[in-house]
Length: 339
Image 1: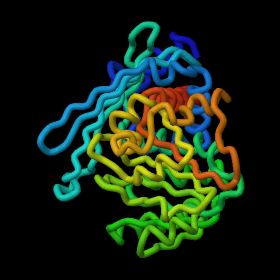
Image 2: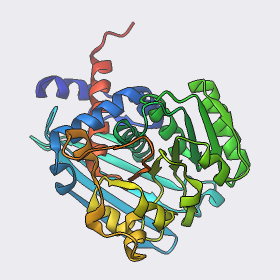
Image 3: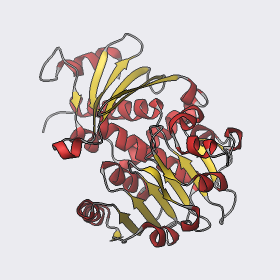
């Protein structure tokens, strides 16, 4: 679609002077798991090292929480720029509000037009799940059928949904300190994905019985330890996106074949930060980045018994790829004849 066609599509929004608002429900419709996984993988493959060098991130703490800003440009399949602002307030559930709120603005990078505004928490969940799935293609055993997800929030659903698209998952264990939330997620996984779901009473036994372990919590001390992980397990450490957050025992990070999306971010706020501080691993011991896995510049899983770990801190390129895919699919919808 050329610039003129995009402009005409934008004019068909309810307010002709406003870009479309792609809320959570719209993003879930526009970005089924396969679409967003392929979009993220393609962006990483095209950008290569620029996937992590051509972006900017900013964190600003306030008394009750923190704001995170991520920006970058993407030049294929069309030139766009994204700026995403997330507000993370851990005490919000007690106020009846979501922990994470925010907005992402997608711009045309050739003429500066604001193309769309998107619900940032949903965009973040979908692209983070997609990044884990991209990593799993290279780091999980191809016969992985059992998954444990620790944490049953919005991110957990996106993680399992994306993983189910690239692995033959059949059984999922869901653990959360809030039993009601774990049951609600279990029901959705059974209904929407047709998976067999169990609700373990603790993490250790469930982790030992799993091929894939995903941690997506707000923990500030390790919740997954080396003794709980069987040979051949793939771990996606998703929750740590702030220096105060930690989910994985440093010894496990050191022993695993560990990959990052951004080495700079992982050292600043990921699991790698804590492992380096503990003196059990050096930054140069990291096996590679996600973009290097996708391009083949780094080797993924080397043996069936190897423990692999993806330290996911989230990069803006993933946001741009997912946002552009959603916008393009919205454009396709907008120019389709109304039945």
